[in-house]
Image (cartoon, rainbow, N blue to C red; front, side, top):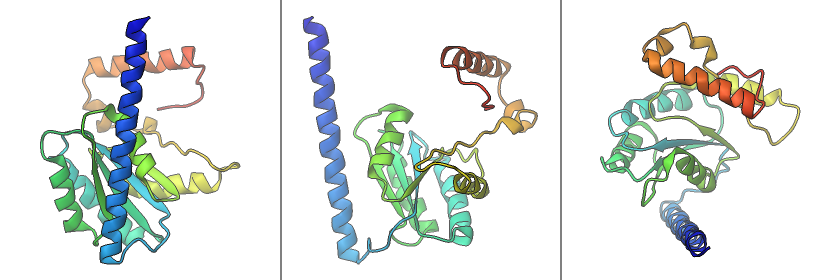
Length: 207
């Protein structure tokens, strides 16, 4: 009984530390915005990018993101890169790429003190986002930003609010996107899909 209690205490302590770090980061960002006179506009979209050791792929992804959002996106937005405890200078690269491709204040970078996995990074991004809507996308640029318009159309057609809109790349199965995967990865992917369909009773969703 003692070991589970200690584990629970450790998890509560971690949660408290994470909340304190998050609050300090948000306060720092708000103070910075006051100094430069930003933060007045209402932000509709926050692009959350979880990133762990992504210094090589992140600049190209942020460039593509900027090209689409600055040219096509009709409303206000921000990009929030969540550095998930990287050890390859991901935070610095994200800040430099953000400054190179976006107007000042459009890109914010949050660095987590330790690696918490993609789920943890996405959660932190959602908790720190200022936008009315949150778009989660990977740092590898596997999905085109131009497809955001299709997601927005699905959102507008949703019968209930709030809602979650999920994009699928199932239609790319016969293309190079999947062909470049190893045969073992494709087998594991299909086995996982079968497991989810049977255990969680998730049917009718192709991904």
